[in-house]
Image (cartoon, rainbow over all chains, first blue to last red):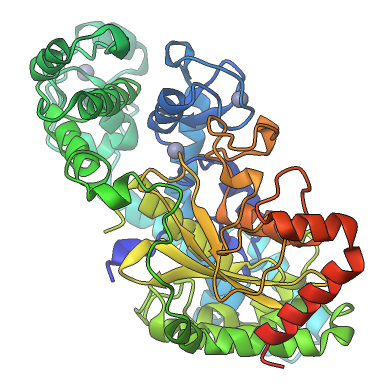
Length: 405
Length: 167
Ligand SMILES: [Zn+2]
Ligand SMILES: [Zn+2]
Ligand SMILES: [Zn+2]
């Protein structure tokens, strides 16, 4: 299956020593799409969603999906703080998660991140091994406070200095063109700076520079300034007028009025959400997104699945085949049902112990068939680690979704 | 393939349920080709006549999920319940969008919203097994029996549960 199916999500933190980052990550994700906020906007009722997600909700229901207060897309406002949170968190995420997973496997202790490397490089650690456990900790800790010993870390810093060499000339670099000048001259220079850069400009300036250039007009965006599209009162528009409007907007104009209407709504939402973006997409990209919509929910979608009526269960259910594939699940649950008495006391841990059989079955026929991605939900190794059992039974984890009955 | 919001979200929910499943509930897509069709197994809640049973259901998601809710149907029979149609289709407020209230009684706050989830649906259905909603009978006969002849209702449910377990 497509590797993009291995989507990161907040449960990646469970079963690591940083499981408390799971709720933090959840709070940085949109409740509608469950992805990180993308162009977050805040509603009149102070709920935050991706711009596109809330626009689609408002087109459909006219209400905030979190509290069901009526709202209008015109009242949405960008939420820059949340956007910055998300950017900072997603930048830090891979490295932190990697460290957390190593710690969960015991490769590295989070309390002593550099200890392993130091042991390899410094022979004197071996002599402290003969000291009692407490002694080791005290000594290694005091060594870490020592200004010199962190060879690994110091080397890393030196490496980066090598790449972005800063001469010790007492001067500072202009943040735009990187020309070196006296500190007090920078502000005056900035007024006149043409931005003609030295070759390594963009690398030295890093993310700041990237976002500045992408914000500037004309960089990979549509030529038009991003004017917002107004909502239309479809009920008073004749079909021909609506069709012409679609043509004027540059989007497909075929289909019956109901389809034209839905397509216009989707386009308006895509367009207006793009106006909320710090790095707007091109018209071509937006048209591609409209095309995905067309194929899944619009005029090119299979009618039956696109507008599924309530009676979707038309086909007769093949009970035999289904129970065959669910044999393990059934056995597990039935076995559980039969020996329920002791179970009321021991709740979570027994369940985790039983998971491997389920997941190995699932790995065989579940949607995720790859065996090399530890984050995959059905991969047995994702369940097996003792650290996982421990953290899953920790009371702070898991919203304890079992209903009170 | 995970190109649409619906697919990404369904996969995320699936991963969540697989990693951190609620007690007594198993759920996931039937096959890797179609994230829009799920199967679920729900354990009968304790201290109810459904106790000891394991109930299989099919969930079908619309292309604009989560804007619209899925439908849910118990398969293989055996769920004798006021809020379950004789064909197995579950009738519960969380599965109804606010604009569409077939029963004209439900509070909008209980109904579907894009911030609800498969997990919340399945937990609601578990609660529903324990506490039928008398106001919206989908199975009128079961509702009447539950209201008027509780012990007969309990006996019939337990009988169906035993049959379902192959006992
Ligand atoms: Zn979203
Ligand atoms: Zn709200
Ligand atoms: Zn300059």
